[in-house]
Figure 1 (cartoon, rainbow, N blue to C red):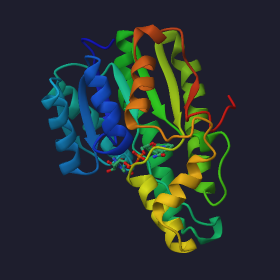
Figure 2 (figure 1 turned 90 degrees about the vertical axis):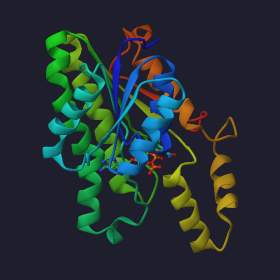
Figure 3 (figure 1 turned 90 degrees about the horizontal axis):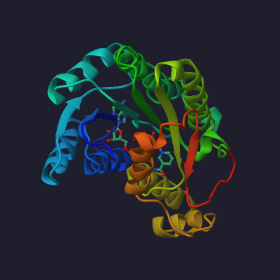
Figure 4 (figure 1 turned 120 degrees about the horizontal axis):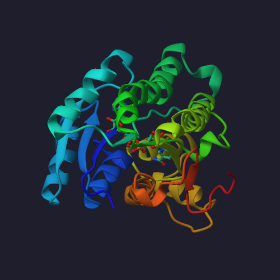
Length: 259
Ligand SMILES: NC(=O)c1ccc[n+]([C@@H]2O[C@H](COP(=O)([O-])OP(=O)(O)OC[C@H]3O[C@@H](n4cnc5c(N)ncnc54)[C@H](O)[C@@H]3O)[C@@H](O)[C@H]2O)c1
């Protein structure tokens, strides 16, 4: 579906981002894996290569607005062509009662989850506009539509990503740039592992029991794999979705059914 394209995936070194990178590569894209963690970024790019694809690693902190142009330009140089597909996946999650979250933690979360998406779009869009084509896929969350308790910062950051997605879709549609979001529900990554371990420690249970209880709210009764999110991203990044824009697609086993 993506033969001949260049994709740039933030937070691509592990978890969902790594799954997306591998999936886009399997569909034929050359993939620039961007991550805060140099080792993970390189390892994920190596995995892309080992699976027969073209993978490149760059290191960048999407929470540092001023890095965006440079990190994207590094990716373009390595891949040897402009970015056709931008996937904003890097994200932070804190689950604590809102009055216990420090100002520093809240501002860092917004810098990564919201401003990071904005800055990367600003970096990528001029070349997309000039070529009159491009696909942007932002990884939001079901909690961007119906936030959980004790995650006011995270939930509202993901609502902002969904709002940004819709606004950009309207603004960039005339340039043939599609902008969509994917909203995962429960994917067992380090982010979820940390959360289950914390709840388990607080409630005297095992992390596996916490995870099982969370899955009870999912009609399909199972969590999603990073590749499930990757397949949705691949579709939205492909010409098969040429008339899909401004949408926030839930990939959550039916855990949430609102638009
Ligand atoms: N795991 C889930 O169940 C779930 C559910 C809904 C939404 N999401 C969203 O999916 C995305 C990925 O989540 P995950 O579970 O894979 O998380 P994760 O913590 O397992 O992996 C996140 C990756 O992003 C990188 N990263 C973090 N901060 C960064 C920064 N400032 N700059 C560049 N890279 C950075 C990390 O190094 C890591 O490789 C996030 O946006 C998250 O909010 C996850």
